[in-house]
Amino acid sequence: MGIIKAKDVSYQYIRRDEEDNIEDVNVALDKINIEVEKGQFICILGHNGSGKSTFAKHINALLTPSEGTLWVDGLDTSEEDKVMSIRQKAGMVFQNPDNQIIASIVEEDVGFGPENMGVPTDEIWERVIRSLKAVDMWEYRDHSPNKLSGGQKQRVAIAGVMAMEPECIVADEPTAMLDPLGRQEVIEALHQLNREKHVTVILITHYMEEVVDADKVYVMHNGKVSLQGTPREIFSQVERLKELSLDVPQVTLLAHELKQAGLDIQDGILTRQELIDSLPR
Amino acid sequence: MFRELTIGQYYPGDSIIHRLDPRVKLMGALLFIVSVFLASNIFSILVVTAFLIAIIVLCKVPLSFMLKGLRSIVLLLVIAGIFNLFLTPGTVLFQLGFLHITDVGIKNCIFMIIRMTYLIVGTSVMTLTTTPNALTAGLEKSLGFLKKIRIPVHEIAMMMSIALRFIPILVEETDKIMKAQMARGADFESGGVFKRAKSMVPILVPLFVSAFRRANDLALAMEARCYNGGDGRTKMKPLKYNQSDKNAYALEIGFVALTIIANILYNRYVSGLFANMLGV
Image (tube, rainbow over all chains, first blue to last red; front, top):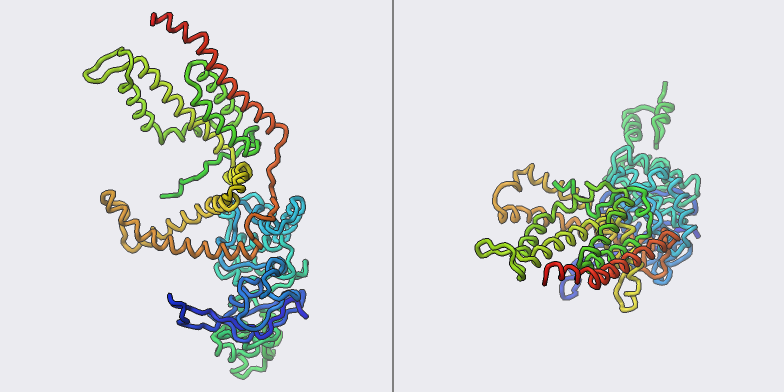
C-alpha cells in the first residue's frame, strides 16, 4: 500500500438551518480513488471549487470522509486516536502565508510543531536548524515574519512542517498569493525536499507551469478525478483540459495550435526546448 | 497613521538586564512598585532613587528613550499634583483666596510626583529590556500555579503571543482598508469627535470579518501542526535560572529590605529631630 491511499472517499458539506434540518448538500468529493507511492511528487490540479482543497484537508485529518476510507501510511484517518500521528506523518502548508505563522520570530515558528509533539529541547533545536537550512532560510532565523516576503514566509511555513519530520507534505495552493518570483522559490524548495530528503510531496495548484515536473498528475473536476497520468499524458489532451476550464502551459498550447495548423509535432510538449527540437527544419 | 504604533516597546540590546530571566524582571518590577509605595520619607526615597539610577545605567537604554513614556502622563501628573497641593488639610502656609497650601500638601505633592515618575520609569525598564515573547513565557511560567485552580494559564499566554504577532498585520490591514475607502471618497479627517467615530464603522466591519477569517485559518494551521493545548508540550527555549538570575533575586529582596530599614531608621531618629526643630 502507498503512503496515501484514498478508497471511494466522498465528502459532503451539509448546510443546516436553525432547526437542524438539512438545507443544502454540497458534494465536494465524489468517490475519489487516489494512491500515492512513497517519494513521489504528485500534483492535484483543478479550478476553484473542484474539491482539491477539501481533499488536501482529508490527508491531514482536518476533515474525515463522509463515506469511504483514507489511509495515511496505513493509518485510517477516521480513527480519532490516530489523528495526532497522522498529522505528524502528513504535514500541511496552507495558502495564506500570514495566517499560518504562529510565532513572532522565524525560528520559534519552526519549533512550534516539534514543541507540540513533545520533542526534547535539544532535538527541537537540531530539527529547527536542519529545516531552516533545507529551505535556505537559516540567515533569517531571528527575524520577524512580518518583515519577510511572501515567498520567504511560505518557505518558513515549509520549514515548520519539515521540523515535524513528516513522511509527506501536502501543500494546498502554497503559491496562490505570491508573485512569480516567490512562486518559483516555493516550488523549487518543494522539489528540493522531494529530491534530497525523499519526502513525498502532494502539491495542489491551479498553475499549470508548476505541474510540469511532477511524477503524476490528478485533475479534479466537480469533486471527481477526471484525468490522471504523467504531465505529458495530461497535457496531450488540450481539448479535454479546456472542457474542464483549465489552461495548459503556453508552450504546450502553442505546440497544439501548430499541430492543428498542420505542422508535424508530437503531443504533450512541456518545455520550450522540446518544442524547438520537435519543430521540422 | 498607525505606523508608529509599537506595543511592548522593546529596546534591543545586550546588557546585563537584557539577559536576565523574564521572571526575575517581572518579580523585580513588582518589588519595585511595592518599594515605591513603602517609601514615605526622604531616606527611603533616596534608597529607591539609587536603585532606579543603578538599573537605568545597567540596562544601557538611552534615558531620553525611557522618558518618552513619561510624556503621555505629564498632564495626569500636573492635575494630581495640583489637587494634592491645594486640597490637603494641615497647617496653612500660604493663603490665596479660597486656595490654601499646607505643609502636608507640599509634602504629598512632591511624593506623589516622584512616585508616579518612578513607577513609570521603573516598570518601563522591564518592558524595554524584555521581548514580548519572553515576557509572555515568563508570565506563563510564574503564574503556572494558577493551573491548579483551573485557570488556563497556557492558553492565555498563547493568546497573548498570537495577539502580539497579529497586531502589525491588522494595523497594516486597517491602513489598506482606510486607503481603499479614501480612494472612494470617504472622509476620516474632518468633523467633530462623533462624526469621526461614526466614519470608523465602515472600517471596523471589514476588519472584523477579515480578523475572523484569519483566526479560522490560524486555528486550522495550528491543528495541522499537532497543537493540542498545553499538555505534553515541550519548550524550544525553556526558562532556566543561572547564577546571575539568582544574584538578581537576592539584590531585589535586599533592596526592599533596605527600603523598609530606611523607613524604620527615619521614624526612630530623624522624624523626632524634625519635630523638635519645628517646635511641634
